[in-house]
Length: 116
Length: 111
Image (cartoon, rainbow over the protein chains, first blue to last red):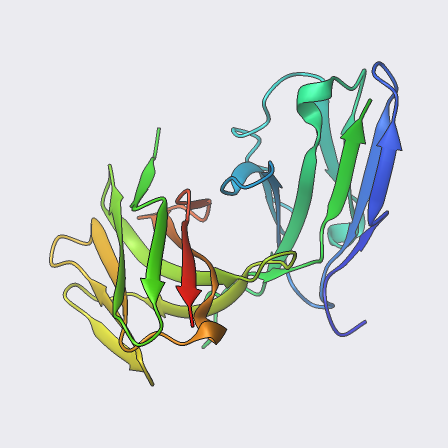
């Protein structure tokens, strides 16, 4: 696709359930970021993938959160045993490092998670 | 860890007035980016500044990067209702690629 694609766009789940959020970055982009944005708040860094390097997981808020990136493309963010405070919009962004790129992060539309 | 602070949190202006948002990092940055997020939308890239003391303009928007590469500002001249939204700065540490966002400044413009 032309842009960053995220699914589902909306997810309502019950407290204690596991959820998976998917991000399909722009083709050829080697860098992929996950951010979390609570209502009316800023973007909280969660995790960063770059090519085949070990991901920077320093922003994951607890061990209930994990993320994978298979084949250097699609990424899945998994939240286990969801809590109400996990409710937020989860944004994925991709970027093409190197060359003459501007460093611009291209964001998807986000996945809105509501934990009841 | 790296922190990026942004003020003010909110700004209400009358259409035609100027607006400025300020960004300050606890560490020296390799670059600073600015994004705009419209209500209900996702952040959209505006610009990246890399050089110490750099100033860039986009029509009514002026972006500055401090001499020490630890602070930045975005100034909008003669605001319009289309400027409504939240403006975020985002900084990247020297030698790293993690991009940390400020909390954003939400701009309200009254016609």
